[in-house]
Amino acid sequence: MAEIKPFKGLLYNSEVAGNLSGVMAPPYDVISSDKREELYQRSEFNVVKLILGKDLPGDSENENKYRRSKKFMTEWMERGTLVTDQEEAFYVYLQQYKVRGVVSKRMGFLGLMKVEGTDVVLPHEHTLSKPKEDRMMLMKEVASNLSPIFGLYGGDGGYLSGILKNSVSPLAPALDVELDGERHTLWRLSDKGEISEIMGAMEGRKIFIADGHHRYAVAKAYRDMCRAKDGYDGRADHVLMYLTDMSDPENLTILATHRIIMRVSSENAKDIPSSLGEYFNLTRFDDLDKLMDEMDKRKQKSYVYGFYDGREYTLLEPMEDGALRDLIKDKPESWKNLDVSVLHSAVFERVLGIRAEEGDITYVKDPKEADKVIQSGEGKAAFFLNPTKIGQLKMVAEDGEMMPQKSTYFYPKLLTGLVINRFEDQKEKVR
Image 1: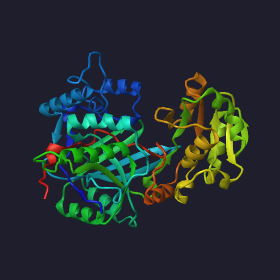
Image 2 (image 1 turned 180 degrees about the vertical axis):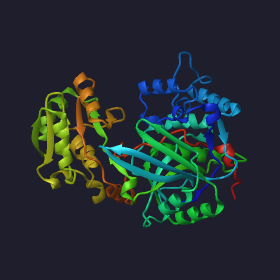
Image 3 (image 1 turned 30 degrees about the vertical axis):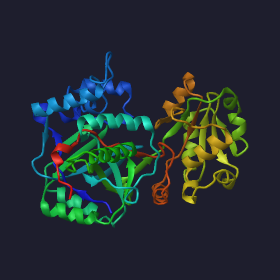
Image 4 (image 1 turned 90 degrees about the vertical axis):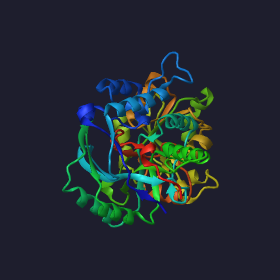
């Protein structure tokens, strides 16, 4: 079962870094080039310089963005911008945010989890080679987990959540910032008795990866690489993980991730509407908002999609659920129940003849962004989805299956820059 332990975190020092809202950033994989420039301008110490550096003219094997990340990190530690805590701690993390005007909260904690196989840590999405190569290059240089992996644990009636809330209630926050309309509060929890209680409450649990599949795959590969070297001391055996209770509805807001088909043969592109009509009832709208509203009204139904090819917005409702499911072979029922799985394996591959290879599809969370891409002519067609349900994710992961890439969007994202796991600070001899 999962092994969770406290650690000595590497944190920003506000006395040197200034306003800590200026040094934080979203996860690297949701930062656009424009957003990166904005973050660079916020502070000379923004963590984006570590997680998503810039490629520069003349870069080489010996001078590149990964080497510059290491240089920045070293300089910031020498200046006292980043400081390692003297005591091991769990870091309790509260996010407060709004979705459609409703205020929500999510509380969990950051700790180190021993890197395990898929019998203990259950992924649910396929990973791609290029992001893994990129993250491995970075990890080799900085020898740290710069961003936490987002993990979920099964419900215990709110027992562990209660421990976290009670433990931090008398404590002053280590960090409390507002950023992009969200409030992020972090507490150090270093009391040995409370740490022991949390570790005990986590015993025997399996962990579901909500976000950070590429980072977890790289953490495992990096650990294996380190273990192959003489004298390895175990410092990379654990990975930085954020954990929250998946049974608490207040903790989880899942949004949809929409698909833009970027590459498709002209012959297939012409046939898309007529091919869809063989399996779906088509209802056309002249407005994206109306289409999304109608999809939302049907979010409890299966295999309801939106479609836009630059001409008309179309609601797709299946004529027969079974007809689409029958197009998928050799998969368990949990997998066939997913809208996103049916979209990729039945609709894209079998109905439309689109083989979604790496780079053929772009993923966006904002339907209006997809709309703009199609109208500009950069993309061929957009498919809109309703969010995946948490119970569906759990069943697929327990069946050992993988969803298509970007099947879930857990909102809000975890901030990067709250706390870093530097392997040098966690040295522990392997027994």
